[in-house]
Length: 286
Image 1 (cartoon, one colour):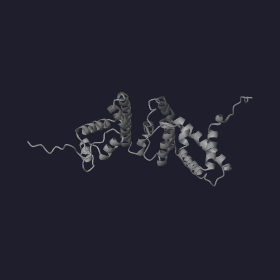
Image 2 (cartoon, rainbow, N blue to C red):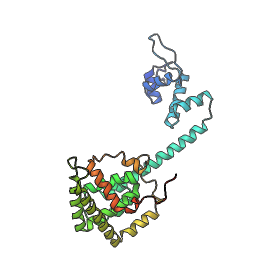
Image 3 (cartoon, rainbow, N blue to C red):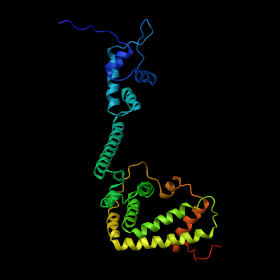
Image 4 (cartoon, one colour):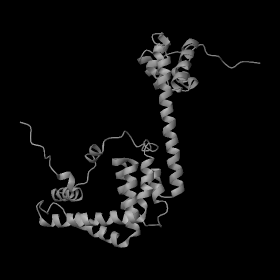
């Protein structure tokens, strides 16, 4: 049997094709000293021999396994134990596997729910699963998405309970809509000291009080308490990037509130939590 023509040396393109990489990658290996520059032919182009190809194959195998180029170089030079690198790699692979599993779970929920709501945390989708079609508005979903980013799954679960009560109490939903319209009217043409702000803040306080009473009567608080008891179990569900504090997250989310709207929001907080406004009764230090 006749063998095919066996080259003594090959050009960079053939070397890249054989090793399963690219000529650009090989040039990078040369640039960082990972692969020695080979001899050049009469045309001044690189020519790769057997030893070069063996080195290149090992580089590719280790790179494909996830070993960094720096660690590959250290391993070849014998200047470092590769075990710490492998330990770091194992941790990284475990994190990737967990991320892939979380993505699979999200896809399963999205398929099961059949709407963008499935992309929210299981805590939220579990609470909202039995709502009638179209009971949850698109803007409600947007709010839940933002709340989950700021306060995590438990905060969004509390927000979901609120939306359930609104969806099942038409009179509360109507008042919520009226308040939202009045709040949107607090634009830059409204001065922050407009007396209507105080009246509207009082209406919002009364509305939130009525919502709390309806929530208590619905039994949804008990369901939320169960979720709170499972806080540790769901602590790492929000895989949408590094967690930040709620105040930091709020400071990064643009709402384009006018000064009047900011003042209104502050007054609502004051009215809903009057005890937080009590000053320290201890005398100042001298």
